[in-house]
Length: 213
Image 1 (cartoon, rainbow, N blue to C red):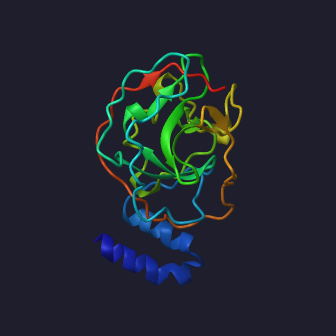
Image 2: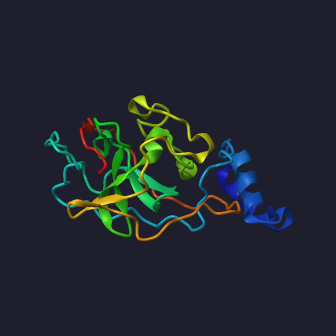
């Protein structure tokens, strides 16, 4: 049935005027909801395959106190490609061990594969529902334990705004926070969903205590 839907969507794309029309028809066929009006839409397809495994010893999240030991899942960690306004395409693992909520009230961090720099901790406003809604692709955000609750702070991506304490996107490398080498503005025109790699698996206990400096 899905193969037939894909064929119909492709055949009707010229008549609908753009790939977005075909994408909308396909979403209807598959019972998928339309993305929120302020959601980020990916202008390019997701990388074709999962990223390389993280380093043998995953570094602790940036913090003053030692973090609890994190059990390393089989590489690469289960997750999916997600397009964010802050970093573009990133591989976002599902497990809680890859999310760090600072005790001091700073925005949360996630250990992600950021193709520009590799595996790193990065400020992750989407965990609290801050900023533009990321494009989660056809798999959606349902496998992320923080989605809809933010581990105690959830703002629902209201209007794409960031909350108090937001100081911009940054990733942690070499003992310091660094700004992304480039920005990824949300596209102004709708595009059909790209292909995105994905995995499955359960999370681990998360660590807490870092402040974004």
